[in-house]
Image (tube, rainbow, N blue to C red; front, side, top):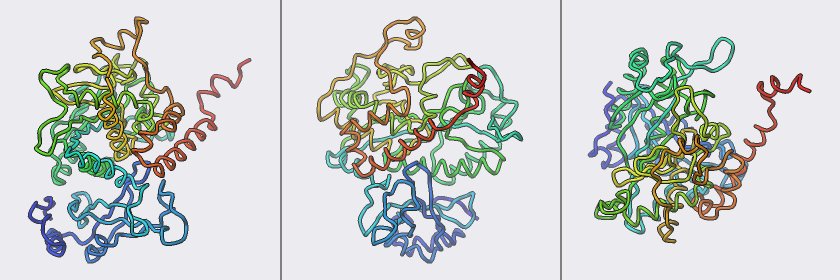
Length: 454
């Protein structure tokens, strides 16, 4: 079967023509997917004959069964309707006969305000009103894990154990089957791959692909995760988006490379004559991100484990890139914001985030910086980890745990407004319950330390 992506001509064709083209590629079923509040893809299989109804009315789901919708158990708004977006239809190379589709969430015939994709669409519309487009390059880092006979999680490749494992060619060679299957699958799905490498922790990899506009970039990342889960499972491994699975190793980030263009495609953040190569708009946008960084942490680093990554601790490799301090610097990976080539690298997000919410909150914060003409701090020219080791003064740091980040989100009207009050309320309720559950748990570390003390 030919797994090629639908052509631009097919994507502009009437729906019935598109369905016919899919059928000619061997597709008989559509996997209609949406993203819940936790950032997990969910969905159902719809026969290709039902595509028109799935596009016009939507595939139906019980609303309260989906995390974070806030929908009731009865009435007209109890049903979550996922309306298939025809332009997103792609045959899935790892599910023969099935085409993937992205859905927008509706309830009662109206866009659902707690649907993460609808949340991002509202912020993208704010940009569009100005004639602006936000371009986003997402850098997925992840671990390949396996559960051992004792039930504990560990690195899937037992021979991956170099002291400094970055760019380890032997590990790449041993895991080439997984990487090559990812290359093949992502290529068939229309990803413009750029590079794959072994990262700075054992069992950790990064796969880079071309940037896109904010909404398409979020859709593409969700498809990347769906693909990686399927390919890893076929190789007897688990694709893990846990930010920090290994206590003595660096964690995984999900860095966003961001830039703005106007309606004519002219870059708005770049200015070759400006400090760090940034324009006034670029500096104000950066200032907005730094001013709202504490609240953005709740959405971009949304798990208890996220703050194990966001810690100024040493790693076994001797290197950490954790963006702990709220600073901006030129090609400075020790800062929260890295300025490079007239764009910004936002280093706060990790792969456990809901990418739609993280981008929506980012836009709201950045636009606040532009509208309020906020001023970012002076560029940081130092290695902040060297300053930390020397006991020298440092910029203000990010929240140290999820609880503090959630309190910052609760207090930040701009970021809450970017999510929408209904979505923000659902998110806070979900994550406050996660924090409470974490504190109710008694760990092995506590038993070892305190059981026979005193």
